[in-house]
Amino acid sequence: MSRLVMFGQSIDAPPAAVATWALAELVGPLEIVGQIHWVHSFSLPRTSPDEVGRALQAVIAHLRENEEITDLPRFAKAIRLVRACLESVLESSAALDAWEASHVPQDKRSAHYKATESQGPMRPPWLHQKGFQDQLGSLSAAFSRYLELLPPIVTMIQQMAPEVAASYNLSRIASQIPVYKDLLTLGYEETIRREATKPSA
Image (spheres, rainbow, N blue to C red):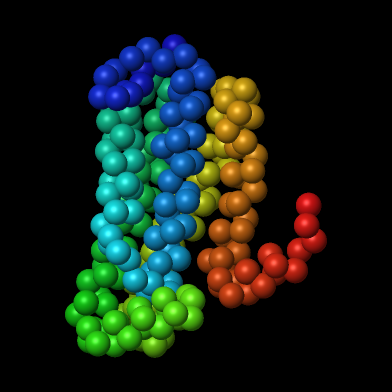
């Protein structure tokens, strides 16, 4: 048994419950972080700009309360490192929003949003401005650090509760990590092109 905070209560949780929690709170944010990076890379319009941010804030709060209570040292370290990465993602996302609001006129942003809605994602005209590149680079660096943390966490979950890992198809989730790494190193356009040319499984 290990101490775990779930639904606001501290409980003695069996390995399967701990593994399920770890999968949801440590590995689960991968899709959220990927969405944040995608939106900012193409400066896509958002009907609810804070919606994704709120989801990540909730995860960070869960990580913080369990970081203080867990009696598994390796687990506590993973929580601490993931929390730091996710906090950096949120900070970088907010900095990008602030930069665009102060450096890109509203009419230019609106024109870009309308173009992406009718033609699909495209890089914004201000892509190569230094301020935007600096902030996007900070977001990419935080995303990259998070990706580096995930493989040992996946292994830890698989060892802790193989049945949980299998039931949630953790191996499929893990297979997405190299694709995200390619997005950061090769760019979205080249990665999408390469994935499209791969033979079907």
